[in-house]
Length: 419
Image 1: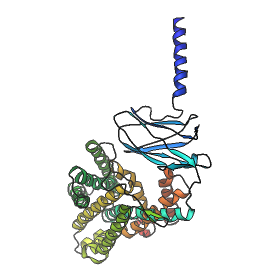
Image 2: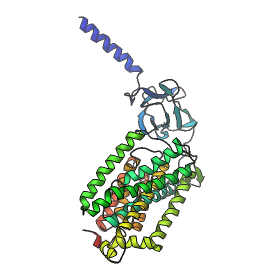
Image 3: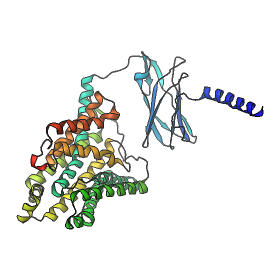
Image 4: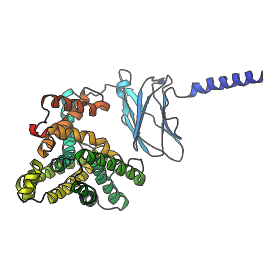
């Protein structure tokens, strides 16, 4: 009898407590919660989509029948709370403060965020304006992707190595910029220059300590690739050990966008595109007009013939590693502003697209990597006009497969390089 009464009491408490809980509360395993109540003219709005993002964490939910919602977050920090206006009833819009609000925890473990709703006509952006804006964003992304892809392509062309640790070179540049700009308080431009120099030193060190000894021992390409995978894992989790799993922002991130007709760009975006174009032009001049650049192309075409012609093949490869690592470091800095944020695995998130760009453009061709990167960057951004943004990277790989079905050597690749 006592057991029956206890069970009845527990069921009663669960019933009453369930009525006050949030219907679709997520993140209940965390100690900190962001919540709110969406109402219009005193009426609860059911099924309104709410998302929370920030500090490397993202989650979403919908309001319940009482208009309430709650999302748990892993730590006290600043988060962006977004209300999807498309899920509001017809004729209801967010009137004050916008549909994206900032939530910053105080001394408590809960933070309440409420949106102001009113009657109005929802502003819509035409398909053409969206296309133009995303085309420019895709071009920006393609240019920074090209900085990393050219390094991968040069290394493959001169050594035959598909370097999976290139992802950690990308991360290294962003992490060093974070250390010198935030931890040491140096101006961001100086921190970026130091990060690029240190990235080049990293490439020099890796070649001197690992890759050159393995080449001299005649290790085959497949074992070298496996070594690069192991090196990638070791460096990635070394970054996580020293820098943690959170996402940090570089100085200047989050600047207000400037409007140029349908195009919306921040000053950081414009600087990123300008830097990428200047550096890529410099790389093109290096490869086409300088003696070392011509020697690099010769080694890429035929290392044995280049050596017989008096070219120092090991010296050229060493320069390629330094240049490739420096370009990867710069790409990591620009990628940290584009994402935005610096995290321990950010380079790995970009690696698949880098390889897609290199393969699409043609293995071992620097200019092919540039073209492939721009194609991938444009497709990634423009594809979100038709497919969910979570699937945009998958779409880039579909394009890669389709191109290779009709041109296996890539856009600028040569057939004799295949096989």
